[in-house]
Length: 152
Image 1 (cartoon, helix red, strand yellow):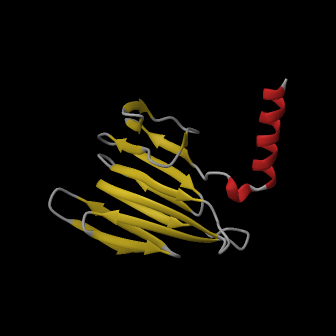
Image 2: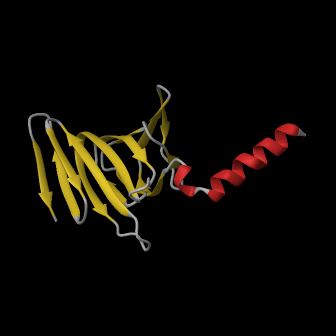
Image 3: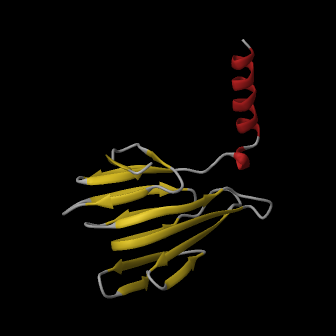
């Protein structure tokens, strides 16, 4: 009985203080083959799947993936490999912070405005390049020898 009360109390706390909850990403759409790396294992990606910090998304030939996360959307093309390195909730400055590490493939990141007063800081690492997206969209591609980035 005490376990049930403790669980209800914890859920109540998260509902009362949403800034304490860990933000997640959700797979909104995909064209297979695509996988997610969790705990050293690789699982098939599914529409509606919830992704969390530290997970890696991989796509195969002719694959596409659309992921929505707090403050933005991520589109991946074929043969892409990207890690959701960091997803931090809004703090006192009311800013969501997300860090993505792009290891390979084409991608587009859209900074989606929030209906509330929250700001979004999306950080992207690709090879030796590091960019911050505070507004707008970015398209990029990481290959074996080069990386290209374009503001859209």
